Image (cartoon, rainbow, N blue to C red; front, side):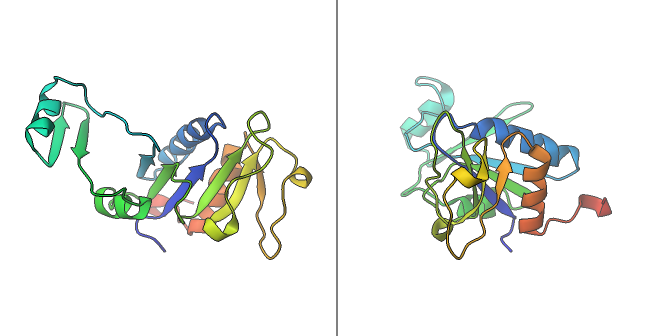
Length: 179
């Protein structure tokens, strides 16, 4: 098993990934799990504002800048190439009991795809690149079949069923002996 255990939620923009990730984080955190998340963007994204102190540190040549406040911190680091979710979780979130990744569609990490009828009628992932389940508002008989693979369909609004699938797939025990 990966350390920390990791699951990706993928899907087209506007499919509801963020909503489901937030609900899953709440579910697992309320159950006592230490949960970390990774949010992927395919587009360059400025993490700090031009002219601010941390931006100036990076512009001056700092390889990494850690911005720290009373309740949060943010790391800005240059990378030679995009790191995988497994590398990121292993380096930065290794003390978490579960890491939920939003995005990284092209990675081979275990993934659940969110397919919402108003966005698309078919998943873009396959079992060959890690697809484990489909979360959807589309009836199971309308989704594609994957010969040789059992890919369950979970109702898009059934957060408990999604969480139970994740727990079962990752072999997550209840924290602190809870059951």
